[in-house]
Length: 263
Image (cartoon, rainbow, N blue to C red; front, side, top):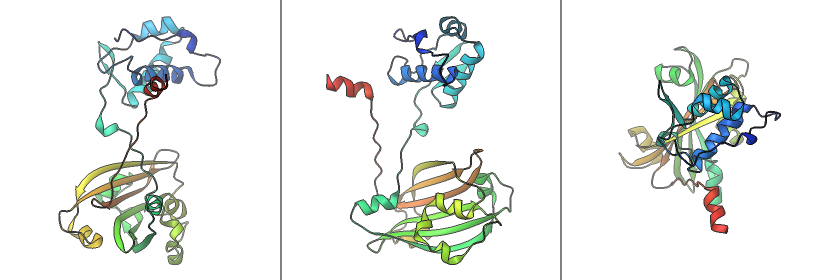
């Protein structure tokens, strides 16, 4: 365990509306982000946390479970709980509204719906949306261009709701090119959470034709999954970005460093 790590029992407010397990998880998380707890360091044993903080063993275990689910710690049977090493696949990368970003650069994005149809979920789609094979899904293909230059080629799928009939002219509404709005309007349920994954790839033959680039051109691919309040997938999509027209930037700030710089 890192020698600089301490938990002040007075910082756990048992009268707060914030659950005690969550307060403890946040204290440990803060120690990790501030470097007081480093990768490989052991957390204090359950018994010690119970004694020092005057809380139940169940509360400690729930806090550890929260940290484990967040990928910040891991438990080895018979040895204890340790701070995990950062995993690149769990890094947070904030992705904004791409069409708004295009506008900021002085270009006017134009979205064209290439096709819309009802499809039956194949193995990939059934896995992404956690539905049985053959489940009816609404499928859209879209192309975003700016100044007549193709930029983004998208495939969007959502669980089809028979209660929400499709009107072709409504699908042509530019306001509904946002995936969340599309799923809200035509999908099964209301989106409550979105997950995006960014990775590099090369264009397929079809993507090269649509984006008007050469074969094997590098591209960025963003996969997005929308979930309802029960954390069940209700929409999945893939957007292919031209690698020669986009770059993705992530800003990460460290409060401690900023405070030191001000001194």
